[in-house]
Image (cartoon, rainbow over all chains, first blue to last red; front, side, top):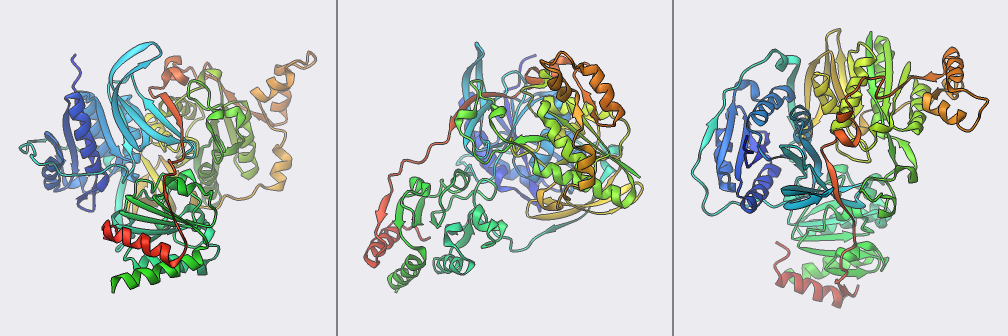
Length: 338
Length: 295
């Protein structure tokens, strides 16, 4: 049987909208498909989600597979996995991509287990390349690139011998953009077939926190670390963020010290951000932190230690005491706006 | 009465790792790293013990790993596990999550009936969070991942609070099922001094083999018998005992291959130094305003 050269992106529906990471994956998938001549397809599952399937064409898909039913209103592992399992076994796409979100990390391993596919979690980059592995040549393999072992190592994983290569990808590490000339909308509708197992787990209620912190969307982020020393000093970080109209964030160490809530943690175990401006204050710049912010357009580091690794990823460095530099920064900035 | 199985893992302490502990094939040379009980698995064990405290039942802990993984099984006994199993075989080496979940699911089938299977969400060495769902799939069990709290339990169902992106949800799950728990979901209990005294001498088959190595006066089988008599033998299941398909174990059964490993290199360091003075900051802010960086 000829292998289907298709790239599928599972579109995660969150509160009636496609998750950012799904759109980011579509843009990445569009690029990968162009290098291999593959067909990019979006897989949309839910209740009343046709508009999401339609929206995916703006990001470059050639075809969308849509499964709609009232029973699919909430994500539930078993029915969703059953749909994907059947589709993948029947059509064997070359690549299936998921967001490394709670939903993606719940369903992707289950589907990989059923379809006996290789799966790499939490990728930060994907590429296509010919690979020589153990004296064998493989054409157009998916390179699944991810940090490993506490972020100290970047591993490139391949799954050369499985028909379908699967990966979950971290939110925010890739950029989404609409394309200029989308393909005409072609949606294949697949009927949903109920099964007794579906009701073994029922969703009783869901709560989305209103006004939740959205660091990813902030153009300016002012971030503080353990180097601030006290919660009192950390207030200066908040003040600067406020002055610049940005969001306040912190490193893991600042969260552990109780200076700031964990929802505002930037780094490998927190949020990955790519703002226009990132100001890192009193942050030494451990690999885990840099992984979450080094894609910012401009980075200013303020640190009393001239050898702090954070300077290595910065565009501007200021060596000195943050408690005197921040007030000066605020003062100068305000004077410039007048 | 609930029969719980807890999947636990001994992991290298990944806080300080460099390329020097990697082997040429890209896998980690674990013997060079301190080994610890994966923290989320310890929380999973605490969950299972709380269920037992409340409703009665049994708690069985299993791990797949090398000989020294029996360390964490002893810790499970110290915390209150009723029984433990070491799943160990040289042929399991190099397993990715697919091969690991195959071995663990077969081992769980071997340990008998169960109502609940617990695991930590993920282990700190790989951070994949895949073994839980993949084991559930192979056992044909429903799964509830990212568990924050068990709200209530009846004879047939549990009501569970789990994390979702941007909030949380409450689900109702019918037994039996598998659940993976988050780090902050519970505080693992300390070891019981009485249980430490009782079980500190517990040994797996591999531990006993190590004792008899190079000692012609000791025989593993005799020792095993003695330890079984004293209730200090940690049952050890090998590939043959589990009647496993060798092609699905270890590196052979693992579709994911490490193609390349790069150490992370610090950025170029081509940054512009700014003096921490008013003049220095003025120049910086002028530049940023000119570049439209402030939004």
